[in-house]
Image 1: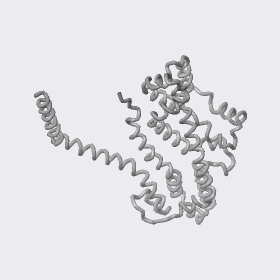
Image 2: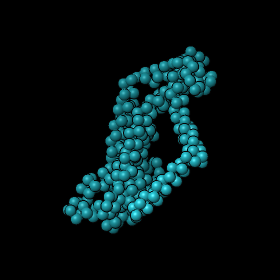
Image 3: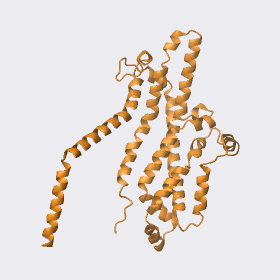
Image 4: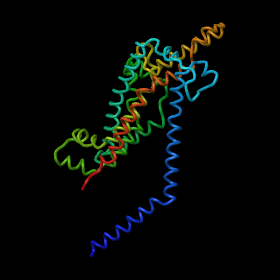
Amino acid sequence: MENTAKRRVFGQLHDKASKRVWTRDVILFNVLGYLLLIAFAIMCVLPFYLVVISSFQSEDVLTREGFPLYIKEFSLTSYTMCLKNPTSILRAYGITTLVTVCGTLLSIWLCTMTGYVLSRKDFKARNFFSFFFFFTTLFSGGLVPWYIICVRYLHFKNSVLALMLPMIFSVWNMIIAKSFMNSLPAAITESAKIDGANDLVIYFKLILPLSTPLIATLGLFSALGYWNDWYTCMLFINREEMYNLQYYLQTMLNNADAIKKAAQMSNGAAVVTNVPLEGMKMAMTVIATGPIVLLYPFVQRYFVKGLTIGAVKG
C-alpha cells in the first residue's frame, strides 16, 4: 500500500511537471531565451566575420564603403603584403608558440602549487604570504626600476626569457587557484597523509587530477596573455629575428603606414595605392588570431568534464 501511494504521488508530480512544460508561458520563455542566445552569438561572431571578409576586400572598397558584409572585390593583396617574407612570419610564429606553451605550463605549475600551499590550514604563515601577494597588486615599484632590474641584473635583453618570465606568475591566477583548492575536501589530503604520502605526491597525484577545470581556466588566461603580448617584446627585444608574432606584425604595419605617409608627402600616388593599409590590418588580425581561436573549444571540453571531477562519492 505504501509503495502504491508513493507511485501515485510521483505520478501526479510527473503529470503536473509535464503539463507545466507545455504551458504558454514556458514556451514563450524558451522562444525568447533562444532568440536572445542567437542574437548574442551573432553579436560575438559578427566582428570577426567582418574582419575575415574585409581581409579579402580590395583597398578601394574598404576606403570607399567601409566594411561590407560580403566580398565585393576579391583581393589577396593584403595577405601578399603580410606574407611577403614567409620565413620571418614562420620564425615569429615559432617564437610565439614556444613562449606560449612553455610560459603557460610554468605559470600553471607555479600558480597551482602556490595556491595549494596557501590553502593548507597546517601552513602557519599562509595568512602572511597571502597578504604579501595581495599587497603587490596594490603598489608597484614602477616601470623604470623594473626595467633596470630586468636588463642590468637579470640580463633579459634580447633573450627568450624576457618574453616568458615577466608574465610567468599572476597573483590573480594564484588567488583563483587558492579559492578552488579551498573547496576541495580536506579528507583527501588527510587520508593520503595517513597512507604515508608526502606533499609532492599529494599535489601531483591527487590535487592536480581534481583541478582539471582550474587548470583549463588558468591555462586559457595564461595562453591568451602570452599569445597577445607585444609590450614585453617592445621593451626587451631589439633583434628582428627574435620578434614575437604580435610585435612583428605591428612593426610591419607601422612600416607600411610610414611608407604611405612618406609617399603622400612626396606626392607619390602610385606608391600610396600599392599599400593596402586597411586591408593589412584585417589580414594581420586573421593571421594573429587564427591559431589561438582553436584553443577555447579544446579547453571547453575540460570545463564541461570538470563539473563532476571534484565530486566525492560517499
